[in-house]
Image (cartoon, rainbow, N blue to C red; front, top):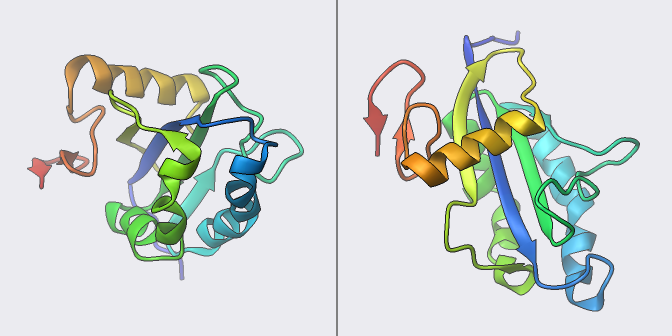
Length: 156
């Protein structure tokens, strides 16, 4: 039996590539795309992730320019997203992110609550990221570190 919650957690993050996606420096990253995306798809609490037209990933979607990748997904809860990011094989890939992505000085990831069943647009995610950059964490745009419950207080 699937239990639906009233709110789901959307997340968007961006990364500036250290080189061309088809270059040798990113070969390991590209090789991990399919298995990590498949892992996300079968993780309990996963709802949706952005994919390009006719693709299994979002590597062709570049709203910030050719050198910036976007990752965008929706999860049933904070715990579901946390477990995927920090308690699965995804963590092994994430530990290598400095090989493939430049360090961002400003916010590069944003979280926010959406109504269950809503699929957020790219524009919505980019707007939330800009809100976080401009105003810091709020109930409308926050981070794991400064997390906000859907209808309640901030949670550390």
